[in-house]
Amino acid sequence: MAKIIAICNQKGGTGKTTTAVNLSTALGLAGKRVLLVDVDPQANATSGLGIDKNKVNLSTYNVLTEEIPATQILMSNLENKISILPSNSALAGAEVELVSLFSREYRLKKALEDITSEFDFILIDCPPSLGLLTINALAAANSILIPVQCEYYALEGLTQLLNTITLVRKNLNSTLEIEGVVLTMADYRTNLTQEVISEVRNHFKEKVYQAVIPRNIRLTEAPSFGKSIFVYDKDSIGAKKYADLANEILGINSTQHIENSVVMNTETMQNIHPQESSSQTV
View 1 (cartoon, rainbow, N blue to C red):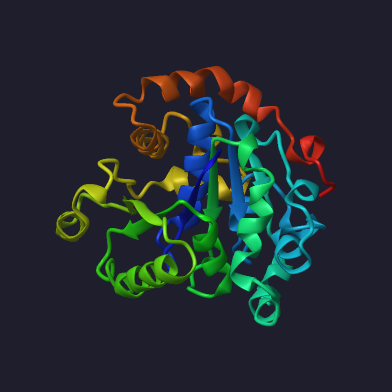
View 2: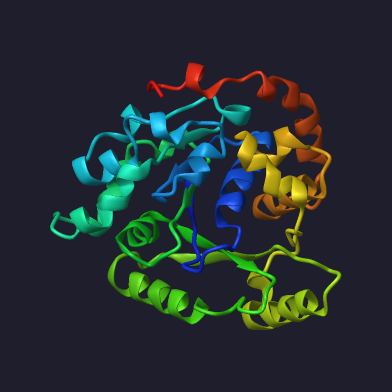
């Protein structure tokens, strides 16, 4: 059965979607069967894998509000053959529509139950809020990965997130745990970055990953081309650090395995056209 990880921080601009896309791809490069679930109405994870979100006919909106089977919207054979449940702008209305629906907090959990055996990892890209879309993700997940940017307001709002996790454990998902905290947007030229890293490590202890994601122009550029960092620039520091993060999650000490996979698979990945290999028309 797949390990389901919700990537969540209600504060915007933490590198949440960047982490979702690139960690998914890194795990795929390590030979794992990976599904990325986009439950953010902005649909940036969807477009970050080269899919035109304006041409997505069926999305996670239909899964959550109409209980359409996930298999009907699942798109496969994307970068390194990872799969995605895409989002589109229709999902913006789901928060309101879900309020009156039966078992509204468990819609995503129910949808994923039929396909968990097909994957090793399911990563859920959550919206920057603690509404019903995020609650659905936390109710469905085994654990939560929290991106925290190395900036002044790094820990702002984390208390609210941790309180939400506690409430979800008590009422919806007793087994939910913190998978880890990943530090993002680090700029080692500033004292502030070092201070934030120290503060976060002191607060979360061993839950903080050793891999720290730097501010990197290649990471910033890759989404505009609809590519992960491993396709856009496999030799960049951003690619190396996301490979390191994936290895930590997999319990591998060296990046050699993923780096070798990047070399072998990049050419193939560049020739993949998501629209041609998906199970729905986009």
